[in-house]
Length: 118
Image (cartoon, rainbow, N blue to C red; front, side, top):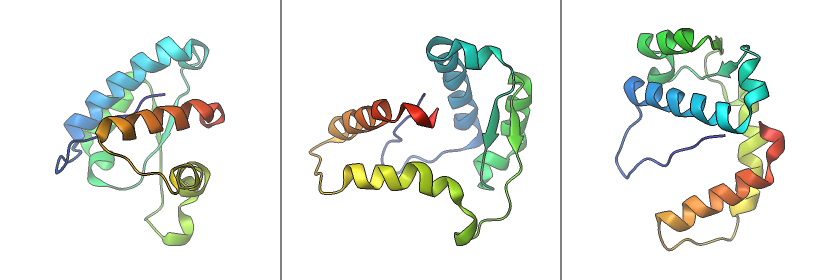
């Protein structure tokens, strides 16, 4: 639906994450209006600081989105890793990239091929 590549050494914080929520909202309105209009969007976040920050929780509430509680991280309790990231790993295996734009295009191609993840 929406992704961003951070610049080298750039970190995600609550403010940036909230900006991404706005971009995700716009992407949902444009690409999946039926999903957006259902008003029951649920986000699964881990317990990383940008995800658990008060500002992030307030922004999700402002948008009417629910944040699903996530148990403390454990290697055997990370089901989201298996669905998307294993497929991404397989897709990228053996590929080499010359620059950031090549990586971005590869991600666009991968996500376009995985319409089932939305």
